Image (cartoon, rainbow, N blue to C red; front, side, top):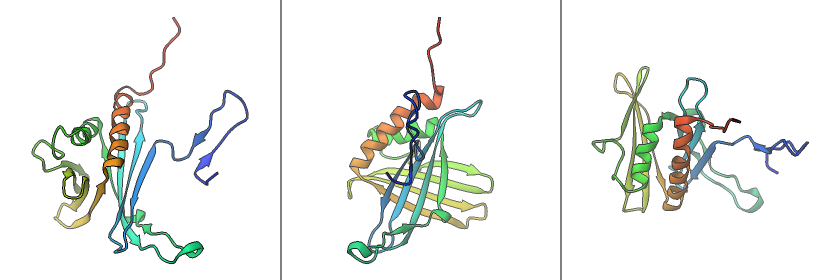
Amino acid sequence: MNENTETTPTTDTEKTTYSNQGRVAFYHANSKGTGAALRFEFKPPSGRRNGCFFMEMAKQKSKAAGSGSERAHATFDWESKAIVKLSFMDACEFLSVLQLKQPSLGNNGKGLYHVNGDKDTIIGMHTNTERKGYTVGISRKDKQGQQLFKGHFLVSPTEAIGLEAIFSAALFHMAFGHVTAEAA
C-alpha cells in the first residue's frame, strides 16, 4: 500500500477512501529538464458554491539521474505552479476540443481569458497534429504585463481519452451535485 492510500475496513458499511480522490496528474519529464506536469482536481458543489475543476501546471525542476536502485526521479516545481479554476462552461470548452468539435479553446480560438485580482491568465488548448495529441498552455501576467508564468503540456491521445471521460462524467455533478433518491 502506498502513502496516498487510507483504508477504513472496520465494518461492511464503511468504505475505502483515498487521499487523492478527485485528482489526476500527468507527468512528462524529459532529459533536457524542460518537461512539465499537469494536474486536475475535481471539487463538487457545496452549499451555494458551484462545482469546478482546479487545473495546475508545474514546470520540471530537475532531471532524472542515476540508474538502477540509485535512480533519482525528475522533480517538478509545484511551489511555483500555475493554478486555474475551470467552471462548468470551461470544462465544456475542453470537451469541445477533446471531441474535435473545435480546434482550440475559446470562441476565437485564442483561449479562455480569466482575471483573478491583479493577474490575467490565458488558458489555451489546441489539437497538435504534428506531435499527435493536444497542447495545453497557461500564460499568466500581472496588470503591468510582466510574465508570471508560461508553460505548456502535451496531452497524449491516450491521456486525452481519460480527460474526456473525466470531464464528461463530472459535468452532471458540477451542475447538480450529489443527487439522492428520497423515500416516498
